[in-house]
Length: 475
Image (cartoon, rainbow, N blue to C red; front, top):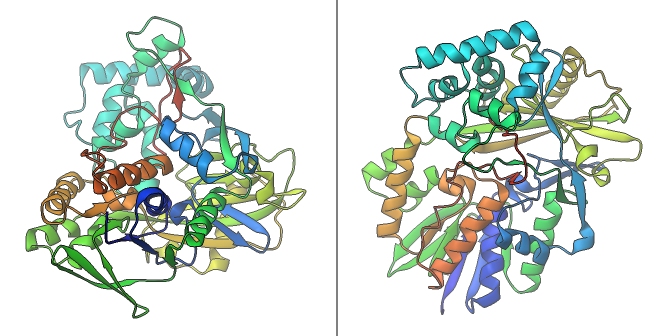
């Protein structure tokens, strides 16, 4: 196909699009990103000998295509096989994550378990009236008591809104479509119509974090003549004669027959001069921001060995804690680990706006409050990430579809890909798949809906070999 392509965003989606185009496309390919390094939210941050995985990225996918791509992109000796472990921390105890009802009830104790079971039978008699919300959907399936213990606190930490404002779409995407009673039956081996799944127990991981893969991919692309501009912002786009004229803030200019964009969907209509109703739809899309405080510590036997633990405790603000030593020993220095304290925030709120030193003090204090006493090293580091999570509120579905249909009609060679590009909570492999299928559409190799990725209710880290059904409070 003659002409040229421009790619906006150098995360998993943008780099996968460039990688696939580079195999067969004869025209020019150019790429830009606002950040100073490639990888998007899958980048690995490097500070004074420490490496931080921003969100925690397990290299496991049900897609054979994605697994093959990872093996193409990165040589096998760079990947390590790492054990998978994550748990929920609640009232000083650890519970399996994803939540297994039998394990949860046994760990809660006889009285609390009895109250949870009574609460479950109560919702069978008096179910929540509105099950279109996260709260109503989950409570109807697990009872009010289990909902408040394992779902409400953490979910509201992540999204910053009431679970009454969060749509049930989020619950259906992240939680198995089972009831408490059905899950307990499965735990005791009582036959279920569908094959029950369990979690993977290990996953591949680049020695130096997920960013290592994307840095290698970017290097390969540049060696093949593909321009990658970092710290670069799009100032203006003109669409004329079926081509895009793209002006960047470094005064450079590109002409493209097709554009692959992982920029936030809310920013696209104004850039393309969309009609008023599409601009209004874009304004309805909301995002949740994120920051991580990385605390180097001495490695001790008391330190938890999970990849991460979810903090279901309203007395602290931290939502999740990573242990980078459990991800890869190459991320930390010998005899040490590094804990990543994850905070879900809104840009310019109190936590986001706090100084780095205050955030480091807060993170250390909260670790002690949780009883996770550590021997801290002198340094600490803060990384802030804007628009980390697309919010599934009352408006997102209609607004997203409005913009999608307008793009399909008015800009058939403009392809929104990736998590923020489609305003869909995609994992890394899902983002790669949106790019792969969008490229095939552009090249005329298929005519499918590249938005139709990651819409099923199954969890991406499940395999079909167990009787006990896992439940996902929301990650």
